[in-house]
Length: 332
Image 1 (cartoon, one colour):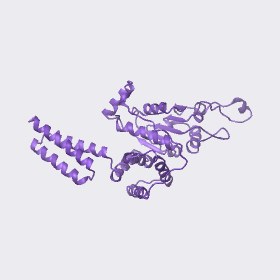
Image 2 (cartoon, one colour):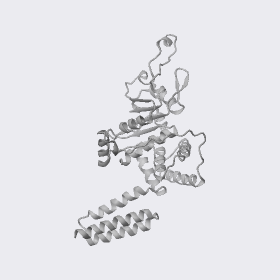
Image 3 (tube, one colour):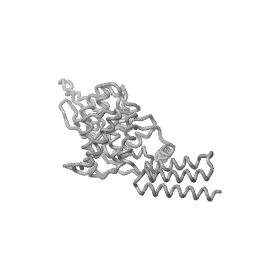
Image 4 (cartoon, helix red, strand yellow):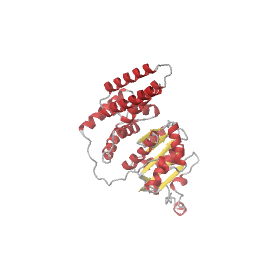
C-alpha cells in the first residue's frame, strides 16, 4: 500500500492517458514527482521523451535540430526523430521555465497535437505530463497552464509516504502496488445519467457560491472525461479526484473544492481515517480518566450513528471503539 498522495498521482496519470489529456503536478521539490512519472511511463511501454527545462533550453533540444540544407533555402525544418513530436508520452519537468519559442510550439502540440515543421504535422504525442514548483502568473504561461486539464497540488510527504517512497527507491517494489489500466479502443462514449448530471450541477453551483469560477470549456472537458472513464469503472473517490484536479486553479482552490466534494461524494476511507483520528485523540488524552474516556467513546459512536447512514461506517466505528474499551479494561 502506498501513501494517498502517491496513489492519487498514479490515478491521474492513468486518467490522463486514457482520455488523451495532459496532467501537471505542482508542489515543492522532493515529493516524488519524477519518480512516479518515470515509473508509470516505463510500464506503459510507449516511446518516452523526458526533459528538465530551463530558460537556457533551446528549441533544438526539444524539437530537433534544423535541417541545414532546407535552411539554406529559407525553410526552417527540424529533424524530429526521437524528439518530443516523435514520442508518445512526454514529461517536461519545470515546464514553465521554458523560453517563449518553446512554449509557443508547445501550445499547438498540447491542444491540437500538431507541430509546425514548418507545415503542420500530426505528432505522435498521446499525453504530456508537466511538473512545476509553483503556479504560473504571467499571461504567456497561463496559456500553457490552461492546456493541462488535470492539475494536482502536492504537499511535503507524510512520514508514511516518505518511508514508502524510500523503500521503493531501495528496490523494495512490493510497497508499490501500481497498475496501468489498459486503454480501450472506444469510438463512442456512453452518456451520463440524468442523476449524475444533476449532481454535477449541484456541485458546480456550490463551487461557484464559494467564489471559485470555472470556465465553460473546462466544464465541457469534464463531461467528456467522465464519459470516457465511466467505461473503466470509477468510484466516488475517483470522481472526487477528477473533479478537484480539473476544476482547481491553485493549491487553495484545490483544498476548498476537495472539502466541498466530500459533502456530495463521501469517501468511506476518508471517513474511517477521521474516526480513527477522533478515537486516537480520546485515548491519548492523559488529562481524562479511563471512565470518562469510555463515556466519550460511546458518545462518539452515538454521533457517528446519527451522522452516517452507511452500515459499513457504523460497524467499523463500533468495532474500533469496542476494541479500545476492551484494551483499557485489560490494562487496569
